Length: 202
Image (tube, rainbow, N blue to C red; front, side):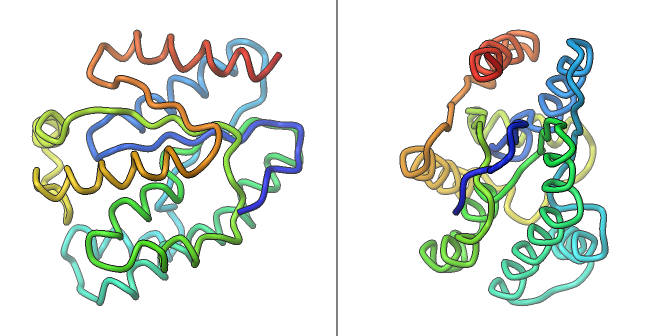
């Protein structure tokens, strides 16, 4: 993976489903705008046609092999970078993404080889800061059910424990990854995240 060549920051939130990635993405991008920075919140899978295919697989609307699904994630990421992330960074805006390649590798490695997943993502841009929200699988499943959005493909406790193990492996393998306790209030999580971002902005 290559380093962001732009002066503006590329930030990603990662974690188990229900860990608060979407919440923190919105809170951080809002805080940045309040402080006078130009910031864009985005997410993966994207809302384009490839992202729609991925979401259809995760919610059981259609079925394909796991290798095909992971290639769709990679194609969606390539499109995301080309059409949204890179042009926005070049404009001097900060990009805050709700999920990026860590989630692909962590969830995908339940079914396919982890090294292959790393290989098909190795030509993409690395975030400047990655925040990995640590929340237990049991709490994540409880939160997800409380949102009444149903349980997606991978949301079973034992599998999520394996997913988290891969997240921790990636946190050790790649630079500028910060593991944040996500079982606290959203305000306390945000406070810790902001302190790290402030140091980088200086």
